[in-house]
Length: 199
Image (cartoon, rainbow, N blue to C red):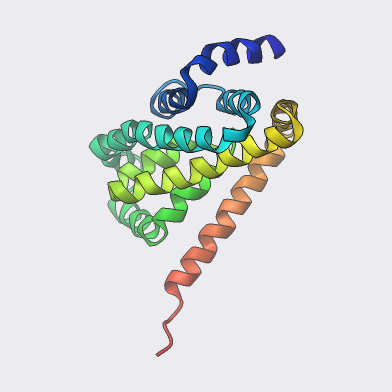
């Protein structure tokens, strides 16, 4: 793990702020990369400017996510309709539209193993408006990278490695807790949307 961190830091450090955006773009669009380690390396090497790296990574992620998003828009509906009927599909789309911003912000904030690209694909399938999609991904990803950067500055890059080990050790528990948390947020948003407005 230490050799891997050193290699990553040596590779991305010369790219500066722009490197965080480029690497986040690649991670979001196609090739999964160990973004937690990379962002920890950036934050540790330039502690006073960790937030700039987080913002640039948020920008890169939001732009890169447009690729799976547009794939979902292009053929995702047909893909889903082969597995569920039209009525169920429209019910899912209506539910998504009522809380589309939070439905993208929350998964974008979550660490691996959250299946983030599935949410991105789903946003394309349900035709989430592109500006709102970009904003939601940017907010969620920037918050995630900002928190990781701050933890690294305060406690050192080992905190990210420790967190990664805990994730792998308690993967099932983390997935259950993550799904429960997301379900709770979605339930609250649906409840708010369906709550009658007082005159």
